[in-house]
Each structure stands twice: as C-alpha cells, then as structure tokens.
Image (cartoon, rainbow over the protein chains, first blue to last red):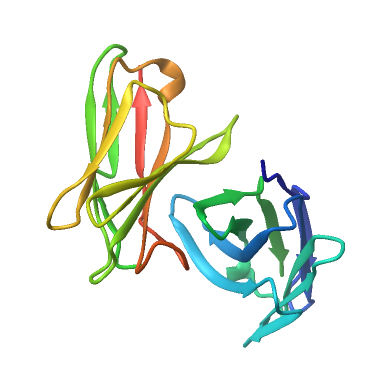
Length: 111
Length: 112
C-alpha cells in the first residue's frame, strides 16, 4: 500500500522561507494534499495539487511536485510565528477514497 | 472553521465500555470519513460513508462500527474499549466520493 514519509522537524527564523518535504511510494496517487494542525486543533486543509501538475502557488504557499521521484514539497514564504504547527502531507489514489498521511513535520518559527 | 462539527470534544471512559462519537458534515457534503490519530500509529483512515452507504474501509477494528444517517450525520461506535483506543478521532467530509476532505476539530477519547 501507499507509504508517505516526512522529516519530523524543521526550525526557521521569522521572515525566512520554510520548505517541508514529503515522499510517497504509490505512483498512482492522483491527489496530494497539505494539512496544518495547530496544538489542540483539527486538521486545516492548506492546499492540494493534482498529479498532472508540477507546481501550484497560493499566496505564500508554493507546492512543487516531482512525479518521477515521487517527491512533494511545501514552501512557505515569509514564515511567521503563527505558522508554527505540524504539517501533514497526504496522498490519495483515485478509486481509493482514503487519505494516507505522513508522520507530520513540526515547524518551529522563532522570532 | 471547516464547517464540520464533532461532539463531544472530550470523552473519558473506562475499559470495557462503549461510546458513540458524532459528526455533522459540512452543508452539502455527502461523504463522511473517520480517522484515528494516535502517537504510535499516526493518522489512520478508519471508514468512509457516502450518502448513507459504506464506501471504503481502512484499519477499523471489529469492535468499532459506524453509520451515516439520512440527514447525513454520522456516528462512530467504539465498544469493549481498551487502553490502546485512547486517541483523537477525526471526522472529515467532502462533497463527492473523492476530492478535498475538510476535517472537524476531533474528539479526544481517553480510556482509563
């Protein structure tokens, strides 16, 4: 089955760019998502990309997809302390409705 | 606020007991999903319902069951509870069978 992996931790300074990386194993994954989880809160859908796209930009967020390497990244420009949270990458295969989540990357933004 | 509501927010119960978690999807969404988030297993898909019918099943134990009612709200029933069932249980909804899933705030279950 699908396996999604992420690094566990990233620390950046306020104003810098953050890049969170994710790899997945199933080349049939057609939808790839980024969710944000703040302490004690649910999962907030940040953005997503279809497998036939290479890049998607949404305000401060840029998603890059390298389908050949099965690698997904989320870049947050001008990172703020309010961006401190756990970021989850998730993959979905058409026909299989479940999301397969990575372990989450804890982003710490220091002033 | 995603528009998905879950009750209760917290639940503390003893081993062997049975609990029911409730979820109301976003207005207009027909699909409801249940996920479990625990420290050792991470976020795991449990089950999906679409317009009242079960559509996909994941790592759901036989002690757990779910249903979706005609008004599209869903309930997850957990029985014969064990300490290892302590986790955050999330409900998510989407408009159709696939596509973006919007998550509720979760129910934190503690089994003592």
